[in-house]
Amino acid sequence: MKKFIVILSVLHFCVCLFAQGKKNVSSIVCNVVCTTDFEVSGKPLAGAAGSMNNKKLYVYKFEDVQLFLINGADTLSKAKTDIDGKAVFKDVPYGEYTIIVKKDKFVAKPRSVSVSQKNVNTTLFLDMFTR
Image (cartoon, rainbow, N blue to C red; front, side, top):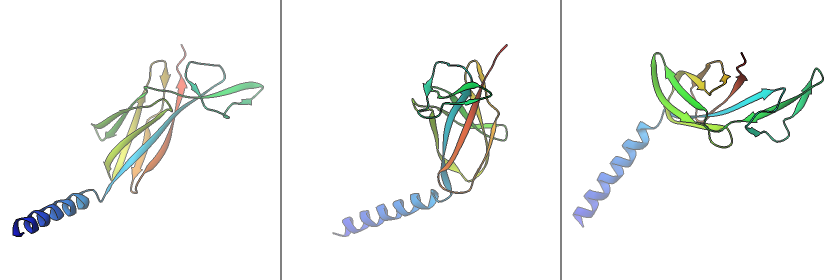
């Protein structure tokens, strides 16, 4: 019985210590989309087509877009978008970060993100790279 109580006490201590260490971390949920005036290969976002200056606009979500979570000069984490254009960075400590997006034939401005709460959401916009 004493062994059981000791083991239970140690497990309780470990759980409390683990929970305490996770206090100031968050997840960053990234949605990557592209708006163009012509059709491209990607998953169209339902109900998001429109028009501007008599041109039809299309909004797409892309799978397998690479995202990099940067702090200063260090890459802290990498992620790829899923079929819905979403990527998640988990267990990110509170602080200031930059998210860089890479996809062939597209460019996106780096996005600054401030993590000071649970579950930060951000949308990153791709632009078609034309030459």
